[in-house]
Length: 269
Image 1: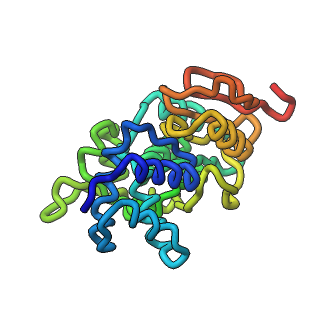
Image 2: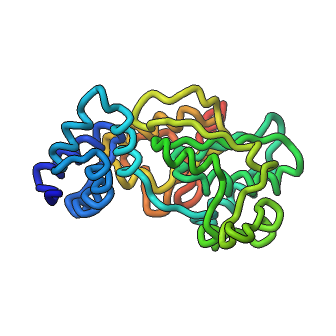
């Protein structure tokens, strides 16, 4: 197999930008090469240029999705950025009326939506709720649906939540956990590309859009944030990553605390 060239890397930069809005820095060349190498072998191709041509054919749309999955997947874990879950618990405790709805807009392998569901199950005291998890990667959505994880992904999960909402693996499954069925029934997954028209997801009390905008340029960030914020209910909340910002994106959201924003209510307050 030939090493990836600069011109071939630029082809894949354009490919993933067009597909997912992700801007790959030159420093990601080794990552692209490493993640796609096994696909070259599987497709019996000699060069990354040949693989790019292969992806570009309408006859190989399934392989195109595989490449997107490989280039957009990022490892995550339960209860990442704990302050957001503390905030979620606080607003859930005060919630009244219709079923509380939360959206994990880039859910990867599902740890975030299940973390959200644990907090809501705890704080809503039997009241109805739904968590929606979306991602561009079909492979990650399949993993999310299995709800089966290595123990290390739960290192920040509160111990009482682990006892209440997870089953510990034994025998061949030792070192893993399974999210219990009762909680999984409150969580559904769907494929969605944040830079394209979204499926009919309904409206939400809170949206987690975390650690995904760092991969977008400013124009794409603006487009994505406006699209996502449009699905917030009045007085709903948007959580972004602590290293991210809504500065200069022109979105009508009110800062509540670092990385948390509120959509104005019906009276504009």
